[in-house]
Length: 490
Image 1 (cartoon, one colour):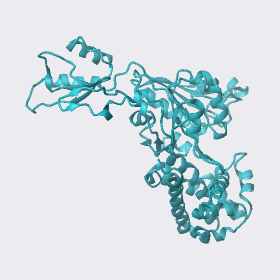
Image 2 (cartoon, helix red, strand yellow):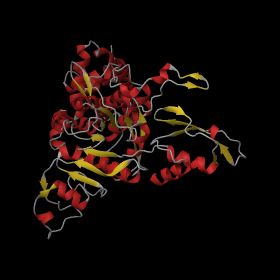
Image 3 (tube, helix red, strand yellow):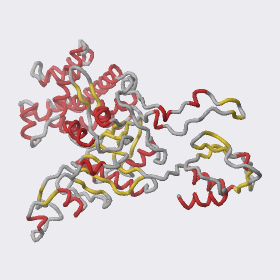
Image 4 (spheres, one colour):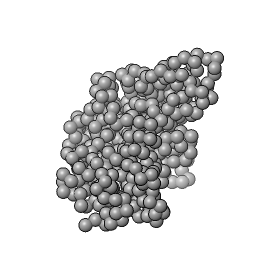
């Protein structure tokens, strides 16, 4: 990019703008040379003619200008992944592959914060060597990851890029990072944000890969907004039909990123000026960089006063996020509906439990499809009712974070499997949870309780018969066999 810049400087020595956008070129197809008067550019201070005097360019020069003036920035984004479990390591692999592929936009090295622990290389690992201290003595997990380029405990058998660096220090890993990707159990969000908030750049931006929402009788809170408020930054969300091992093995899948760029992140405000068509419209004169307020997912002014990122960094928008996450095996759609994407990751777990119940009864695929259909409708209704300012129906019906994640969860996810086994074994789902999940907890059972209490407190429980009916079955108030009638509602 710098060599292209030097060529432009040779064409016009006074050229010094760091970011230009070629607005229009008018020329007949047969023209070999273009008069300068037909060239209009956008600079950081608005539209104007850059060059004066009789000067012409060949069409190849114009092509060169177009290439050189799109996205020229003197700094690159540094990326950190906060979390290194199964899903965290899979996402870090993707991100590190893409920072290397797009070295004009990102620093190649990606930091991955690891909760430090000491382990030995397992006997089942391809790295096991009875004569090696790594296999006979405990070593720090970060050392093993950086030595073998593999997370031998949480993502065994998957090669990680050499530019992905495991770091046991949370504060050091996020230092100077402009993009923070959060991928850790939701119960640790508060404590970790408290530890890092004085160590991050004030203009950093985030993406939460933590599925679900926090619900109680008082409110529904998005994890992305909880992170944003704790750290004083804007944070989007990533969610979809993404089983971590399949993604890490590069089996084809899709995901949805929800990111609604704050107004102050829009660059290049246009000052008032006289143009050939008159005065610049008042709406175009607004300097969005001077605004530090933005709306939350309910349309209210956020408590967070954001700091605008420096103009010498590429803007963090839908295009940049797609470059950071999209791979040939991991397709990304970027939308603005953060609430819809987050809600889809939570409510689908309740529907998966209901689907598991009818599967345990042996009622077949028709019954499962019926439960999924009603569940999808109630997911949409919940989003539109409580996040009417931002939720779009299409997020649930068209995106991976909606219908695709619902199908995956209702086909083989652990909420589905445990509910199915509880009916088949005629035991509570809590017993199955203890026997099958090795200390882990189902998200669907706790979410069902929280959603019920939230709806009950607002007198809306009758409007969501499947979500509420599933909770009542879990509580033992009604039988699984009653589900068809419960789905109909009153």
